[in-house]
Image 1: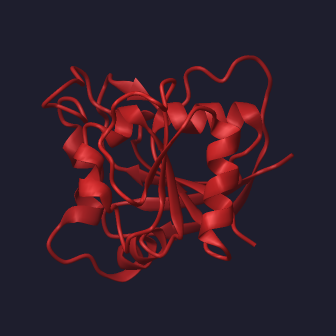
Image 2: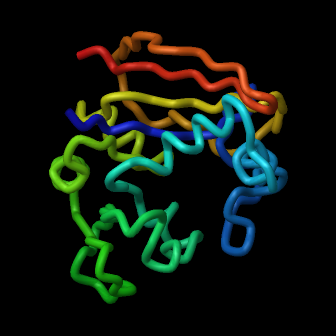
Length: 188
């Protein structure tokens, strides 16, 4: 059965983007460092395994805050899988690519992505999307790529979850050459 899985690189001090994030500086100052492990010219070993897992997902759910700075990945994140973009204005003028669907709420986006993915997992992108999905109870797992760097400030992964503790079950820990990959299942 398909699972919704957040894949997120994060600094040791809990930031997913550096300070001064904005147009032309989508990951903020120093934020590109968080993705070096996956984007270098030759990814090997455990890091390769994790990248391959991420790129074998069957659909994507993301918010506009992730989608737009990436220029919509040109309409194809990987392998022509369907992309469901959360937006408050799904009927507004948006780039129209055949694999991209604009959806107004996280529950619908996750449900539609799971149906589209079939037996494959759904790749979840973005802090805002992750926060909405956790709050709505529709995020199944988190794969955190912990990077040995301290950014000092920037955008934290979870800052707007509201009150209430959420329990996670550790599924695995993999030590890569430039990242430690932590996978958790959300307990319900």
